Amino acid sequence: MAAAAPGALGAWRAGRVRLVAACCARLGPAAWAKGTAPRRGYSSEVKTEDELRVRHLEEENRGADLKERAKMHSSEVGPFVSKIRAVINDIANLPVPTIAAIDGLALGGGLELALACDIRVAASSAKMGLVETKLAIIPGGGGTQRLPRAIGMSLAKELIFSARVLDGQEAKAVGLISHVLEQNQEGDAAYRKALDLAREFLPQGPVAMRVAKLAINQGMEVDLVTGLAIEEACYAQTISTKDRLEGLLAFKEKRPPRYKGE
Image (cartoon, rainbow, N blue to C red):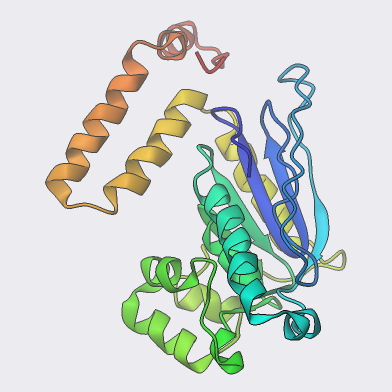
């Protein structure tokens, strides 16, 4: 995934995959269809920020095509999975908030993509799980690392060892997703919820959003004392910005701020 502009926003949808980006750089294909290799055809169609608030990508993504995988020589499997892992890592490393909206199936690699996002929402009818052990392999796109960080080690082991598939309600109960919605007639309840969350995020200062994500992500990997030092360093990045002054001026003038990511 190519880097997006600071303060941009993404929402990824599994089943029919939608990646919604509200930013100054278009986010291109981040998923693969029926096991084909991840495509990295990103574009940068920057005009003005107002012209490029929302873009979406829609694809089928239910994980790997096992018939295709069976035809692969053993020497091809490692590089193939490495490419998948690289794309998922790129999504995880985006400097902007990302939301995975799961309205359909997110099994194996589909769930690993969702785990790379900051926030996950799902329809109650959605199905998700890391099912690789059924095939005598393990999750290879970060699932063994990100699932325990999301729901705890013991529960993550249980789900991976059993290859269990959860619906939206079950996923909410274990903390895998933040919100669960009853599916609507259009089949996009989670996607609509993701857009609602996106609208809450968009007015905030772009630099603040970027460094807040950085502080949280890096802080969770270290002890508290080190994490507080990371927070201090990240906070310092906001002090000299024009956006901080604009925020104070807007508060004084009782008007919405006009942030520029500067």
